[in-house]
Length: 128
Image 1 (cartoon, one colour):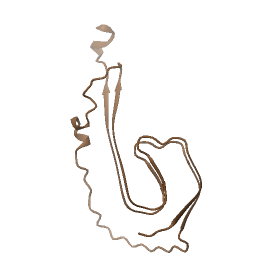
Image 2 (spheres, rainbow, N blue to C red):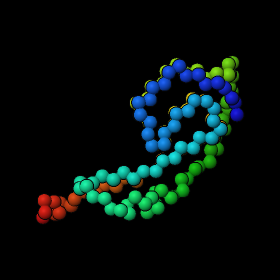
Image 3 (tube, rainbow, N blue to C red):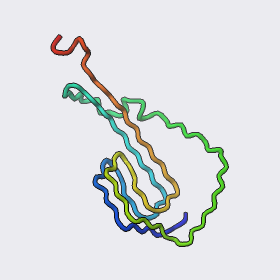
Image 4 (cartoon, rainbow, N blue to C red):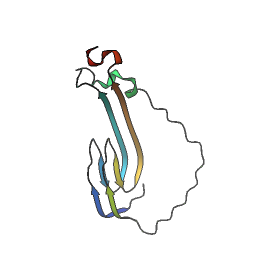
């Protein structure tokens, strides 16, 4: 892997949450991973067993990775072994987001979210 020096003049990140990473410099492997249950309800009710990820197939189904069969020709000329960045300004990073300034050999990112909406039926509203 090509090694270079990363130089960043200024970074401002207002919020980085839920396994987000800020990294300056080279890395061999970056593996970002996030799982989340997003539940929207009309009533404030919590069922004790609903936070079990194994209950929902979306978290265990394999992700199909199709082979890349395209020919790629690339020519790179690095006169200086330095990556220079003046300013980075980020409002928010979340759910395993990665800000990386540097070289990477292997990058794998995965986010899985199960959205659940629990709304009242029309016949159950207002005690009917």
